[in-house]
Structure formats: C-alpha cells, structure tokens
Length: 170
Image (tube, rainbow, N blue to C red; front, side):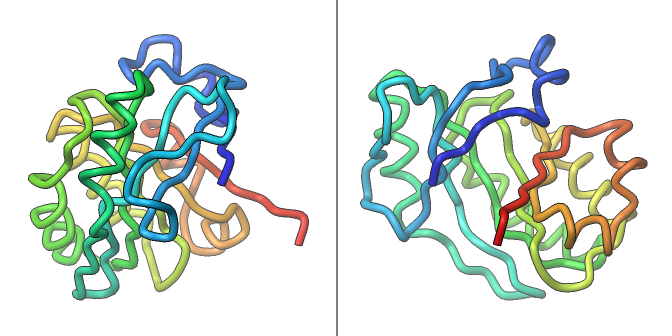
C-alpha cells in the first residue's frame, strides 16, 4: 500500500522522523513478504506493523523484525504501527507494555496507533499517545477519518499529537 505524508507536514519541521509533505512510503504487515519491498525508487520510508491488540488479545506480526531490518538495510526510514482496538487506560497499558519493548525502529521514529474499530475514547487514546512519547518515539494517531470523528475529539488530540487520517473514495 502506498502512503503519502500530508497530514504530518506541519509536524515534520521539528521532528526527528524526517517526514515531509509529499514523502511516499509503504505500509508493511504479514500480508507482504518478510523483507521490505518498495514500489518506487522515490519511496523514503516504511510503516511496519508490529502487531495488533484486540480488546485484550495480542496478535504479533511474524514479519515485523525482518521487514524493519530490511527497510533499514535499504537506507529507508523505518516506523512502527500497532493495530489498536482498546477503550481504556488499562487496555492501553496492557497493549503498550507488551509492544513498546519490542519496537525495533529507532528512537524518535513514528509509533502510530491504528484505530479503526471498537469503542475508543479520547482520554484513553491521548493517554496511549503520551505513553508512546515518554518511551522516546513520535506518537501518531492513524485511522479512517469517518470512524475517528465519530468516536474521538480529534481537535483536542490534534493540539498535541499529529493525525494521519485516511479517506478512500469507496
């Protein structure tokens, strides 16, 4: 999947993630090969799924470590995302206490919460993003714009954290 950075552009100026408006990269998970494959020579980064958290259940991605290593070996920036279905600070702690020690991308890199389902609430999402920041990573909230606006106060979250909002024509 091709990813283009646009929502992060204002954030990029002072961030160690070096994402700029128009930068392109790929989204990698177990659906791709165990090594990072880029679609275009101009791709600058990969966002690699470390796993998922589904209301208490962990689903680690077996391809995470090799995709991160392959991304870095190719001279591209490596970032991490977690599919995050949680609705409380307790669940956020459980999810992040499990996944953050396993992150293999550099400190300062993006660790995005991919919030696409469940019953998230603004307070627990902000709590989780703060925990990612304390761990030394750049927290980002990702999700489908329609889902996130129906469940969260995005204006409040955007005051402190960058948003990566997806919209698709279908």
